[in-house]
Length: 128
Length: 142
Image (tube, rainbow over all chains, first blue to last red; front, side):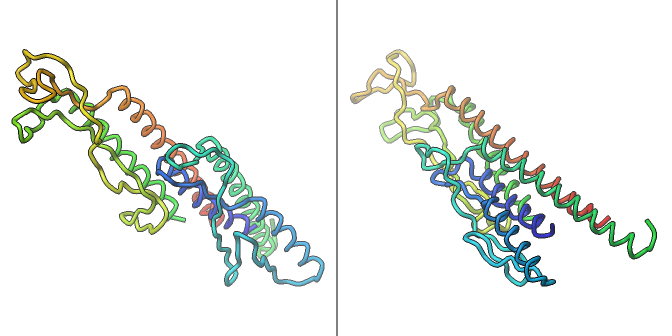
């Protein structure tokens, strides 16, 4: 869940940068692929269950890498929009959609994290 | 995470500079004699253009964000209007008898203004989303 929230924050940074360059000539849309993160997270979790290890290793994918336990991202091109005459291909509609879903993902991860912490707290206190 | 807000803020700043330049263009459009050229003829107001480039050092950002690289004059020719009785009409040469008008096109400025204000709003939305995410992250603690 921590990784999920960290990824959402990182992706928000890339999306905000793309919105900022909505009108910059020659700018091309950037993104951190959600699918890549999700499939690697599932793989990493399954691997951990399989070997019964305590530590969790994310490893690296094309755009994402785990450095000293924290996630780093290298944004790639998000190319599904048509190029305008000034060499810019930013699509506001697509960005708004992605940003909304990313925010929802972050909220979800934050809720679950809080739930986990609350459970810990209840366990430490010894009463609900 | 606070960086993300800087990215959106840099874009909002850039768009507001653009709106300011558009306002200057609209205000300057009726000016027929902003200066005088070598032949003693009146030169009207020339349209200003804003150029954006990625990166906003003003906000502590190297490659992210956006800034206004420069504000340059639009080299488009001045439209001519035949009116030999006008006090500012060109006296000699091939343009004699014509009055030079500003190369500002109010329709174009209107469209540019709409795009700029929409872009400003889009960045404001991104700013709000970032804020909500940060608030959510802080709520985990308390």
